[in-house]
Image 1 (cartoon, rainbow, N blue to C red):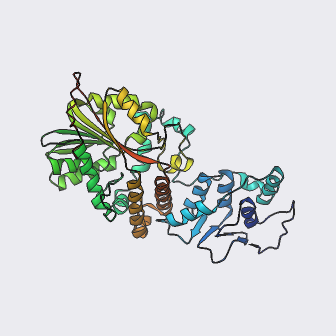
Image 2: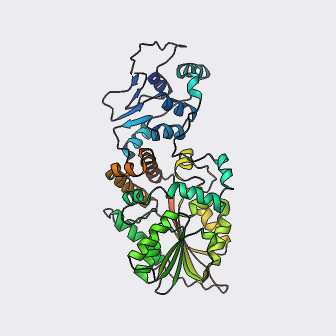
Image 3: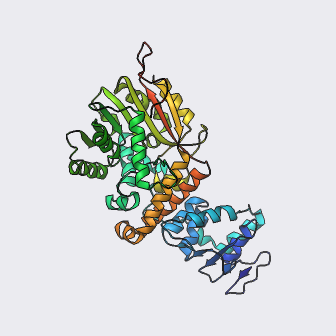
Length: 434
């Protein structure tokens, strides 16, 4: 199945072409074509997907960082192209590759042959693409993990890309968290509105109450609570660009008498006595070891009988699991996930009474499909705004995350808790009323 521009023989011990190297690592033939800069090729010419390794730097990325990190480096830098898919939404191609491609572990003798074929010069790691964040050990110069200083740096890495870029990808709601689809044919905007209203109803927001929204993003929940429920809402975010955008939109909507977004670490909020607290997409960033302090801090901000809604990505179990290299370096540096059981336990241990929890996993898969469609539709403008490398990161990350939610590798849980009074009064109804 391998065609060679240079008819190099592949007998044992001979130097292999790159296509032969690729083929030798496969457990079985795949309906994918592979072409390389040395002129070699593998796979059917009419394959729906073609992987094109364009240069020696791409090869060096692949062999010096095997797995998702090396693939990401080569793809983001443009040294590896995937034909047959759109870079804004490579979901279909990634599904095909995941299902079809199975690699085997070579024998010691084969390793020697592969190294000889690849060449030792390619075993020197090239500098990573500029979109890649520092490895964890080098982030120590930015402060200890999850210190305010280091958290600020990693939040800026992900969220201060470009507000215009986020407007094109997220849509008018400017909401970068899981939506709630009340029907299969609901639009992304309808689903984001439904999510905010579900949070508001779970919190039982009433006119004149005070809401604290930690990790508020572009202020979507703050504005919804003020506009729809007459609530006085304070949001805080570590992203300066988010805070500036949110404040501008609050004034545009005439909500500045009720709503405010500050560029501030949630741990620095001085006000207390809130009737409700929402945390939508923050818990993933704070670190599992910091859950006790996090939930205790939020509890101390709440009035007796107040409610907390914690909305975050989780794992399907509660076992300690390391974040993948691609996500850690390119998407959420220092991000950590655990199961909903751990989140509920820590909330309870902080003195909160957990009243309800809900898994919205399938809703996040649909949300990501909507964002990917937006990126594809606005691809040229997104590339002009942030560069092709960054746009490729987002296409890859969102399609991969969609697959993760669909395959139940990650989930999204909303946990609702109350600060129940010492006499057992929680203010919670006999049955949920939302």
